[in-house]
Length: 302
Image (cartoon, rainbow, N blue to C red; front, side, top):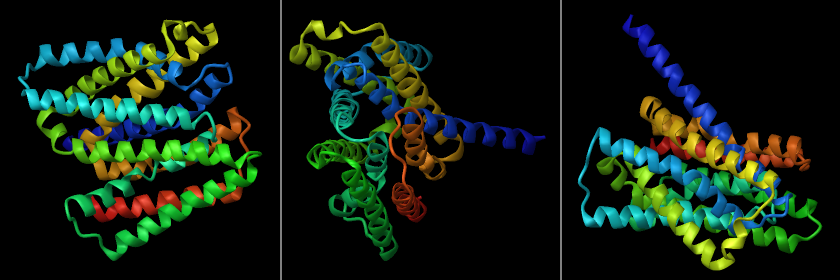
């Protein structure tokens, strides 16, 4: 009986990870569809945060009512800073990059963040990098460069592809930095509480920044943009963030990372289907190399 319950729980965890990965992979597609309606990066990010904020506020209130916790001033400041860094700064550069490159290339670049985490830990905390790690890094970056080179070949303006790739790479570096810095804080605060507080900080920071940059008139968009932004906020932000957290709690972070490794391939196929982005064998091979390198890193360090 216990084995049956355990199997059902394990299956539930796998379903959470798979669904969360699919929804996260669709994020770039929804953003590109919104751009096609005429909106630009910062107003879209602001509207995403406006629609997502009530959900995270409700979750933060629920967590506090269920299990009150007194955080130190230092913990509050660190959560605010990490939230703004990851969900604010990183998201802004990601959105800016998607104005210039394909959704498939964006997802491939973002997916190398675990290798950046490994490099940061190696140079920052003096962790040993093994020969297997070095091989994994080489495979992952070779795959990323292969997809990038293919997008350059398919693009009519290689300058914009390079600019967009740089923006997304900055987003990837800042997210990797967030993972390294948040590693000690999340276990102490709790994953759900940390996510809710960090997202509230990010939402507030992004909304204030975009209002100062673009003015209140930036929120006036078409009905189609509002619909796409609500999909982006709810189905590609709120729901997958908690699905992945739930999956991690059941199957563990290492297995979650490996099961979520098909994300870039999903984005490539969704981009070809919904955005008419060209899908080539070279892109699939490049995505496969990135997935293989990241998976090898995860197995070595899980």
